[in-house]
Length: 273
Image (cartoon, rainbow, N blue to C red; front, side, top):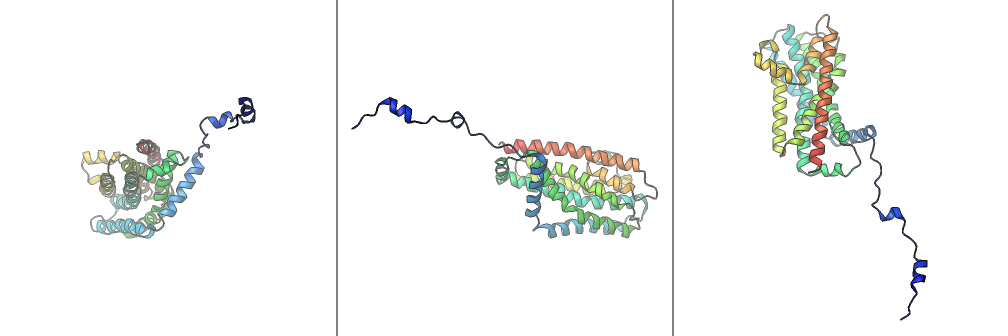
């Protein structure tokens, strides 16, 4: 057996870089807007297969409510509330009900672990999924609003306001739906919460407010979609008061920011468990 001096070994051994001895550095986290776009495109392509049944169910439901209410309401402000509420109900069906079910199933199946391993901000995951689901509501909302105007003899002049009502009401309801799905301990409970929220949007948004008891009116004021309904209903008049319309849209925007912030917090809470 040959013996090698220690000096030779020390001289022939290359030093290990100091950086390699420590922990490996992770790459920088993706910025919010590029990550949001990537999540949005991924969610949009994933849900594209179910787009036609989704649009049919949401739109058929609202059109059926319009036909049913035609035998009860003749015209005037009540017809304006019915048409506006039925149009926003399409947004509530997708953004509140289906999004609660999606996040509830994602949490139960461990799908949140996949997003947690990606260098994507939590806000991008919530906003991207909410925006993708809200995008499917655009055709159904427009079809419902046009059909309702023709059915009740309302003007089509200011339906362009849907370009603001859909994203703002959708943001407010999507945040609530995502929070319900992420905070619910079981997916069945998330589905139940989504169904209850959509039922509240149906009863409190479609039915004329003048015929409701005072306590129900207070509950109606707490529902975010109410302000989208009010903003759209005000535009059916001969001379809309645009200050009130902008005020209702501002409330929708504020509630949307708050609800999406709560959903982001709920995502962080669910992802670390």
